[in-house]
Amino acid sequence: MGDRMGVGFYVGDHAREVGAQDFLHAFFSTISHHLEPNGWGSKYPEIMKHLYQGKLAAEHARKARDDLHDIRRKLARLTPDEFVWDIEDPTASPPWAGREICSEITNLSDLFITGRGENLFDVLAECLYVLEEQGGCMTIGPY
Image (cartoon, rainbow, N blue to C red; front, side, top):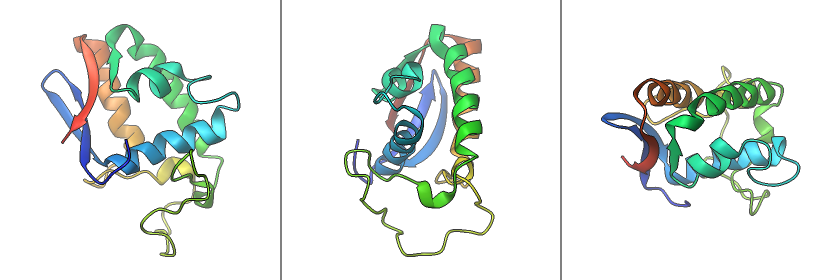
């Protein structure tokens, strides 16, 4: 991942827009940087390894939803300025660097907003619920 191409989450015929690929990479980078001291996927492998690589099987949906709740709770304790654009270069700045962040965004769990203005945590939780109910696989792909 690492460009401006739009991506989304897919479960069967259920599709939800995320936004640019580099934005989704920043979401995962922020999680790993702050919550996985032993490296990418060491604490949340279903989300950080399986899903990030593009495919999460239904048998992992429940664990991934529980982990997502934990991640959201922990990122809510961190301020927006602790955002990580790219884990490979934690000093890298996002394209909007230098601009004011909306005053409604008071922590990292509120920072990730999809192209349609929805909280990425809500969109991901919905897709994981659909995956758990429908079975199959959840994928990340062009949107």
